[in-house]
Image 1 (cartoon, helix red, strand yellow):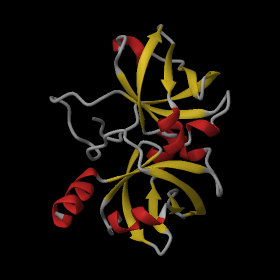
Image 2 (cartoon, helix red, strand yellow):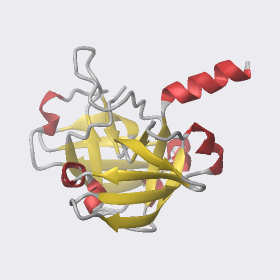
Image 3 (cartoon, helix red, strand yellow):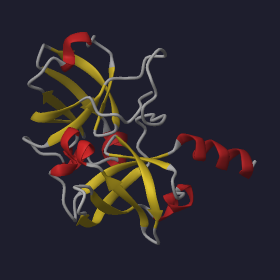
Image 4 (cartoon, helix red, strand yellow):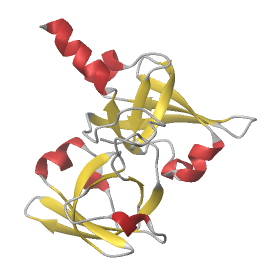
Length: 197
């Protein structure tokens, strides 16, 4: 379980194709991995991945076929930047919202508008089957970042990225046409199942 509050930005430093899956090495230039243990979960652009090995500046993770089919990991290239977050401790503050790291689909940035206050208004197209889970002022995770829906649109959602979010995440580097991992609010998913029953 995560909060969608990004701890640091990492770099995909190595990719190896393994029988339909991908082994990735993600590197950082800080002490992000100081508390990491073998088998830990780490959210990488919103995807919960298991650490198979690590050192003080990097970790190795594996994305299997199912993960590749539901996320942007299959599009990643060496040198790409990724958002990183450790799992939530029960004693931590919940600064964002409850994020599971279980990606529901892939969206695309359809519009970016710089605002006078330094923020950026970003529109996302998301898969049609996820539209029902989007609500104005609700929560959504896009590339692992906990965001508030400023407006539900016919194609998905519009969010406002404040300067601090742009500085601490990969969003300053993303542009129209780029793909992002989408995780809808878990509470909305559970409510739908209960109602359908």
